[in-house]
Length: 161
Image 1 (cartoon, one colour):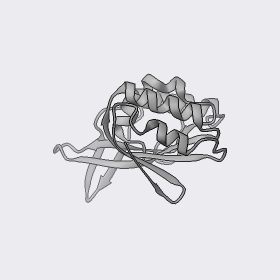
Image 2 (cartoon, one colour):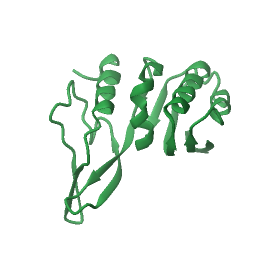
Image 3 (cartoon, helix red, strand yellow):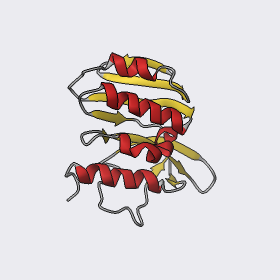
Image 4 (tube, helix red, strand yellow):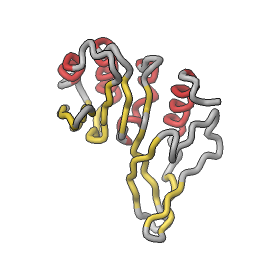
């Protein structure tokens, strides 16, 4: 795993398939009480056990809330397996979603939770579309698990009415 910084945002990249880099990242943030903004858009592959270890280390060492920004598709596809490792104050601010046009074109865009992805008590029938250069893209497949996680996160924080 590669770790870098862009202002107040901690960027992580590479593969997250072992403990390599996880402990170093967590220890570098040890005791930080202000929100930690983690950008996982550089994570392209890994394993559920690698993600589980990563989240365990963060939970163990980081005192303040963690705000996940630009969450990669790999990251949230594995996230539901480790949801219990998120603390009450942790949240997801934005994530990459893959949208597809009828001609097979793919659009990988960052969508903001609470803006393009509304905070809903249920996502039954939820659809997301975006038009680019006259071409309409829709969710390739609705990531039911991540939408359920968003509901749980924001409901426990009182964001959903």
